[in-house]
Length: 118
Image 1 (cartoon, rainbow, N blue to C red):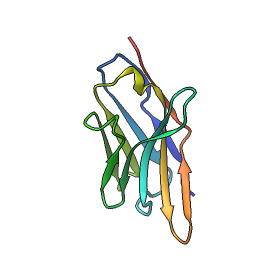
Image 2: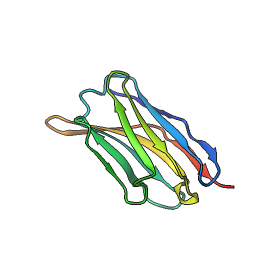
Image 3: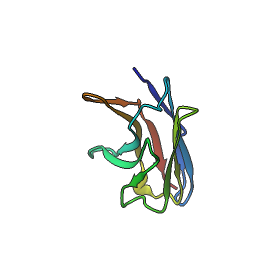
């Protein structure tokens, strides 16, 4: 069982930066995928960025070139560096871990609020 705890959210002005961190209670080395998702008020949860165990990354088109996901297996953390933030980036950001064995197991954090506003 892995527990995920996000931190680093807050209020930032448009054009600003934030760094989100996701700390896992156990090792994430065996996690096949780690990612960040977000859910804005009244909208469905959407993928922001993912990183595989091998280090491959994928981003939503809306954040490409602005956000960077990184994974530190030794520290059991996944981070999301967010630059050039826009009001439309406002959402609750969730960390997710996926483990694939004979079935797919998903773990979610509780979320951290990011608000981009002047």
